Picture 1 (cartoon, rainbow, N blue to C red):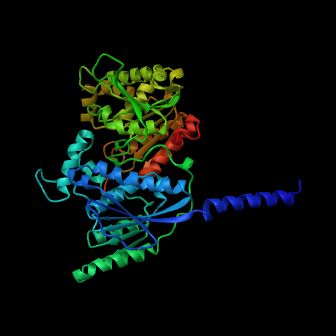
Picture 2: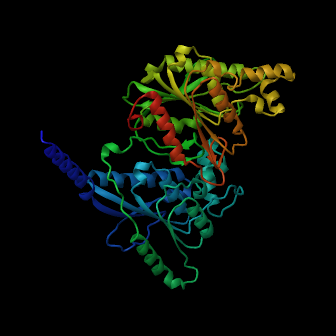
Picture 3: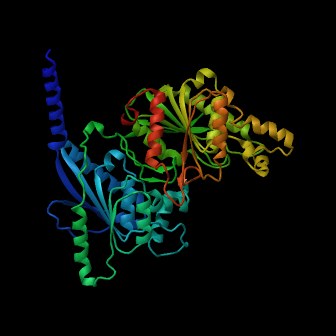
Length: 520
């Protein structure tokens, strides 16, 4: 065939594709106002205004409020994509509602966030209080205290407050921001500049009260004129089959609302003790799912599988059969490290043996664990046969305790129950992953905060050095601005939560050797 004809054919094809994807996609401009009660119209003829009401905020149902916001945004975007109309969304919120709105849009998945082109925050707080007096009525303490009752033991008040604070949840994927009002304006300015986010500031303090309303409208109109349309219109098949988190207390502990109908099997026993149980989550009518197993932390003396129910539901939505394991906690002399490691090994064996009963493929298994749970997971997997270890294609360790010798002597004695230094050293070596790498055959993805003062970064540093000596595969990811077990402290995480999750997904997909695990 004539090469010129071939060239013309492909040139025509790509021109048609470009036109159908971009040029024919009309720009659908949408202004979304989020509030607890109806708000005034912005009176901009080029934008369609949609009001999202969240009256449940006063009852402390902040998770429901965030889900309401996220779900409406997703519906608008999906509707636009199906109609080949490019969604171009600007969000507006005021006061406490503005803070919720900023968190809701931050926790949306990237496929949706790219269509949010502007964020207008009026009198929004950059941080929420980390503690409130028991009977304090002032907003937002009353709302936060009601929400804490809903959260229960899943998170402390501080964890909950930080999960709702833009100061530590912001990332560099935020759209340009219009800040109106005087609330925390200096702090907002520094925050946005530090994260490289474009912004405009408008302060109405010097205006006569009668002129403020008109000035707000003018500021909004000016901001809307600067908003740039998205560059790509995705197809329906490009959109993920799961949701993002509603809130993140830390990397593994999230609040999540399932997208799909999930089957749940609770308290499956793998031993005679009440704590020797696990929970299972999977999509109805699914089959041959990859298997995701989570092992909680808690310093060997606390923690429970139910705290990670929402994380497991998210992975079930992604297409996994997800399992949360519980094990007996440290209570010497009845339960020590030997018994806890044995529990984890027994649980892993039991889950892998019964994988088909839960619609899973046991030969496509990923294990995720944090802190003390990561140390137990390491030792439990090491105790498995090489053949059984081969069913586990990768492990993700968050803030692993790699060297028990790094703990202060008092803690070493508390964990081991051994006073004599020479005997305790033998015990420390026996249960330290750093010393036990020789019979561990599973690829490791290890995340650790550089500023972790509970399990310092030296644990992963030493583990990486030893792994190199023994030719073991460990992929590290160092996190800045984090505390244990990978949660933001005074600044947002670097890399961000979404970047961390993306890197975890890449590792998992690589080792499971499947292309579309997060879109099943």
